[in-house]
Structures are given as C-alpha cells and as structure tokens.
Image (cartoon, rainbow, N blue to C red; front, side):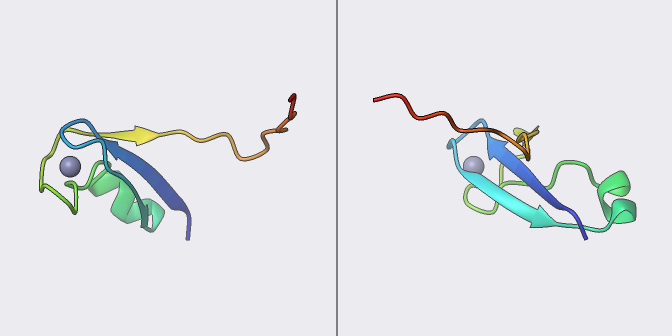
Length: 55
Ligand SMILES: [Zn+2]
C-alpha cells in the first residue's frame, strides 16, 4: 500500500496516510488529523533524493 504525504495549510501539520489506490482515488485529500481542516495539500516527496551535504 502506498503512503501518501500531506501538509495542512491551516496548522502546517505534516502527516502521512497509508491508503490503497482505490481509497486515494475516492478521497485524495483526507482532512487534517490535528485541526480537522480540509485545507490539505498532498506533498509529493521525491523518493530517491540524493542528499548532498555541504557544510
Ligand atoms: Zn491542520
């Protein structure tokens, strides 16, 4: 099951939801678990990000 990442625009809370493709199709943006806002945007986090650390 894929994990979707979301960010709430109301309280800036970031959360993840593990949904089936079907569930995600029906409900692409679940409400924020913290403030119950529906002002939630899905975050498309790059899976294979190469973190080049430069100090
Ligand atoms: Zn929120």
